[in-house]
Image (cartoon, rainbow, N blue to C red; front, side, top):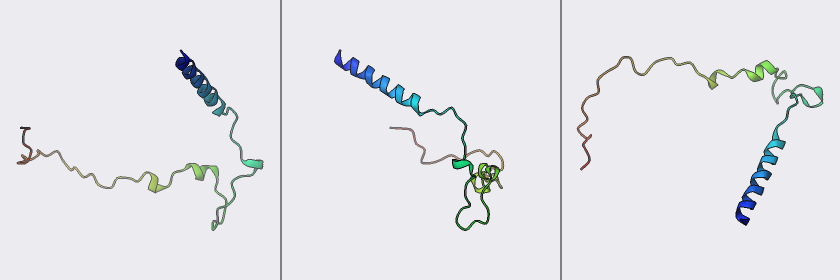
Length: 82
């Protein structure tokens, strides 16, 4: 009985904590200023530039390793279980 009550209390506390995590307001820059320029950069990044992934994030495939379907040769080590 006590165990069930403690589990219910823990569940309620977790739900209350999770409900406090959500924010419904829109995101804004602190103090209304955009992000500062990074060290060594000549200009501050724009929102569009920050949201565009670099080419390394999604490289294009240059060559398909499987040119055509081929039948596999028999494997002499693929033995049934004993």
